[in-house]
Length: 252
Ligand code: NDP
Image (cartoon, rainbow, N blue to C red):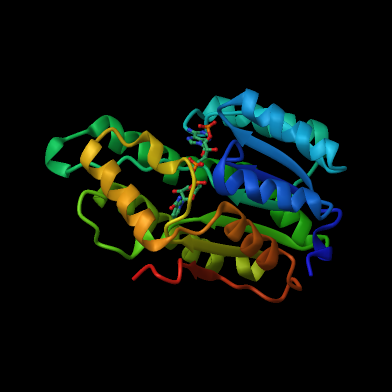
């Protein structure tokens, strides 16, 4: 099913854990070369080593997507190792819920700068590659991992949800810009998924609430999302599953 991934060159952000890691591993398992981008270089090195041991190709690239200079140097490292890229997955993200009344502008800034502006930096950096690949008749993919949070009105997740609503809308409007140039834009909106995402919440009540939801609902696994991304990016280039909402069956 995923044989079209062979020979592709991918960049996956947020590849140090969760959905990004699972996606990178699956793309590599199907013959794509994958640049792994995130901040924790030790994690990336271990994942790249595992991919290599399984016969795949992966390049660990430590980068903080909130730092424009770091993104620029990451792009150079990817190009030096792999040349042009034809598949970009924006998975880097943070979720730091708290009541807006608490005024945690440190958290707001981090979420906006990672989930929205960070994705935008990565998109801009690799857009010339994607346009060139499509222009040369190759399949070119931009995949943004947004969230069902883009549509929910869940108390205390206002800023996170706003970043995801913005990312979803960015995907839609970018699609209007890039689709006519044969760059396929896919927006994935997962529901509750079992990853490290909730581990950075510094509000015990909200952290407990999330654990309770997970116990009740039974979250998706990162592999479930990786599978979707491998599926959407391995369709014939004319087929664009532009918006995929993937929820645990029990999530209302
Ligand atoms: P994880 O926390 O496991 O993955 C997030 C990844 O982003 C990590 O690998 C982290 O690595 C990386 N990251 C965070 N900040 C930065 C940064 N500034 N620069 C570079 N990389 C960064 O959680 P998930 O796998 O769940 O998250 C993947 C995406 O899925 C996120 O965008 C999240 O919002 C979204 N999502 C998650 C859902 C869930 O229920 N889990 C539901 C819907 C959407 P490092 O710390 O090493 O930088």
